[in-house]
Length: 98
Image 1 (cartoon, rainbow, N blue to C red):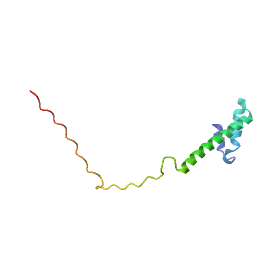
Image 2: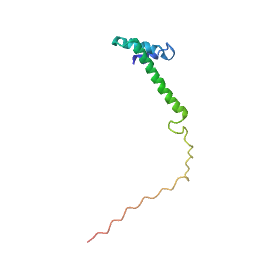
Image 3: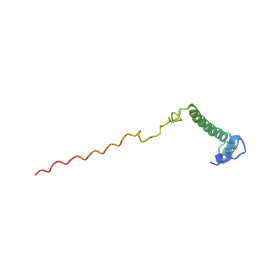
Image 4: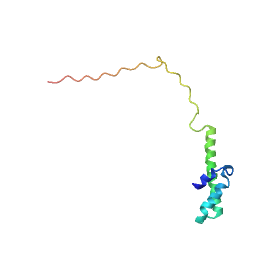
């Protein structure tokens, strides 16, 4: 949205104030009070930060997807593979009856 793009401008740290003012300017003509528009901006930012903290905490605790490193796999050598098994022969057809 326009507000999200406006917060990307290097005006304030983290877009603080720009986000809220963007909501006031964007929602004011539609009858939304300044207090409600500012509350929406703070709520939107709080939800964003909360979700990021949950994801970051999960990654830091290492509980996302199990271990981060796979155990080393020994290199394959020609002798480490099992010999190929021969294909099973086709079953013999029964003798023709007369």
